[in-house]
Image (tube, rainbow, N blue to C red; front, side):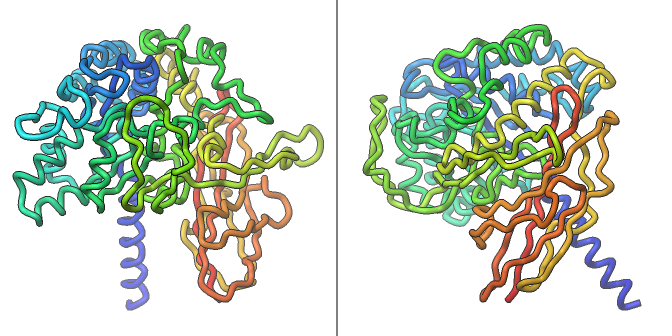
Length: 474
């Protein structure tokens, strides 16, 4: 009886943790839409993930490139296009919201630049909307995805500070998670300096070339860059995919520079948004006080000031891609290795571009005609503990594909995500449903992350993931 009770307690605890991990993330978008076509591009993609991301607001704001105008009507135009394809999207997932629901979430900040829009009598429907959502009885963190300037968030924080008790302020701010696409007004550094406990992901300043998020559209020598080409976008997104695809504008300065701010909110088995140091579709980030004294200034007029506290910012991955092998084992490691901060994002680029293309197909195709990602079923827990030097197995034998497609496995260690930083190799074949690993010998407790990537052979090829975190004890 005692064993049964303990087993039930473990099962309930595991189910509770699993449920928390699979909860949709809620997010409010701040967008300087019309400053650059990439905001509209990112909005098109965001709406195709509205079944998995709980959108709580889309607020038109200013930025250093768009100082005195906000354009909520441009948001409405994209949502209107979404409304025309939503009846087909729900054939693939009933969780896609109706356009009428999204229209109610469109708000605007003040048409003022940066800190000129922060202070007494500077409230807007956008800043008040952020506070209202924070005050809702919702235990989930509230992500603020900042595509332009951050002053609407700054005003919300200003009002909270001046109208709430210290206890209330602490409680509300603890719910916030901020990811800003660099600094696009002077309120970003003000927020970080005045709210030292606020969870904040950013590559500070306006030197976009030094920012992790640019990995989404950077041309990388030594890999295939086709999936960010204009011809790929025209063929897979813009043309022949209904009104929402037609609403996706041509690239002007860079493709979808704002998309990384929400990519890690997608529940794909790899991403864990509350752990930026683990890495995922939106890149990998570490918590430290950066020294960007050698960085260039971008010329936008945004302040270029030293950081006064730790922030989540650029991290470096050492990455050797796996490539197709024509004879023998179906994959092999490439002969080139990459080592920088942008690779933390672009290493997943083919996968998330294919995923985007498949979802665009959902706008016009029936479930049977379109492709859907494999469903990974692990035979082992996602957290296991082993002893130093011990061999152990991981397995995903029961994995399936909803379309009946064939699929391929790939297991690999992600050293930067754990505390044990040396590469742990898979023994034997890394592309079978099971993997055998020998834990390294350690003299203190360490963690190691192993990623399972399952890719189908449909069109486009779609990938799902599982992350297994192994605690290695001496």
